[in-house]
Image (cartoon, rainbow, N blue to C red; front, top):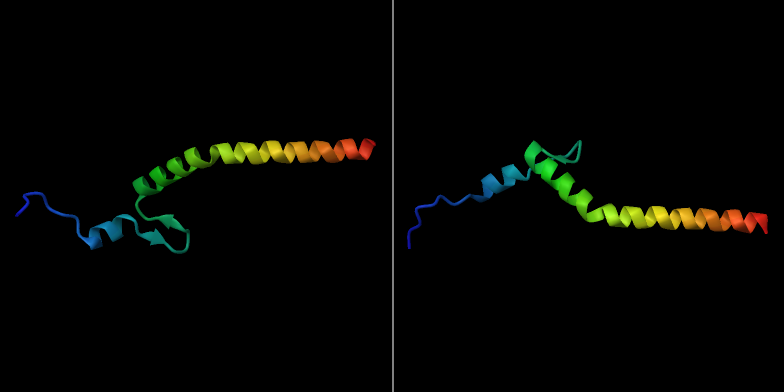
Length: 67
């Protein structure tokens, strides 16, 4: 079968997700923005849990100092 749609070659895909090795960012700003948005959305609950755990640990040491 012959398709009318052009297929993206490996080089196109590699250029789209090409990394800047010095700054460790995607060279394409749209890809970088989508990556940052997705990563933040996925990790925000873990960040909140770590902050609460740190606060509880800090409070536990404060109570231990009083005792």
